[in-house]
Length: 171
Image (cartoon, rainbow, N blue to C red):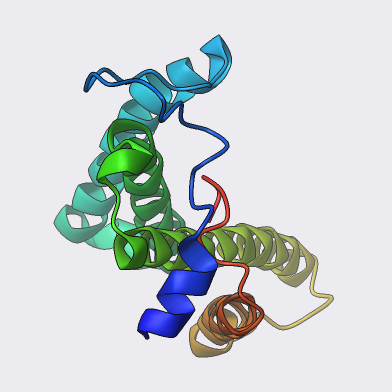
């Protein structure tokens, strides 16, 4: 794992952080919109995703479909938000090689999963509308979750094998 970490992490976050500073300030080379997104929008988004998850477990009506897909979107969103917060608040001078690699893997896996869950949510809604119009069947939940999780894992493994993890703040 050290070989993978060492090669994949050599430039982890290097282009985004100003590591020439001797102080511990967050002297990062990020534009104001990125700073605002990381510091304000990511925690707000995570908070509302947590509310969605709590609502899912508190109210039985939300456990019906498409609640499971919305739960998947909310869970992956929390992980993505945590990635953004960690990526912003932990300067590259304090990031160890494998920590940066792990942060990249988490970002890729949750990012891919979030995209696929959003796509599958739209597919479900389309099927539901067609079903209401008596034109199609609705895909089983296990099949939909498989289409979100398996491609995410495969894409993340591909990124790991090709050494494209930990190259920048996006994973």
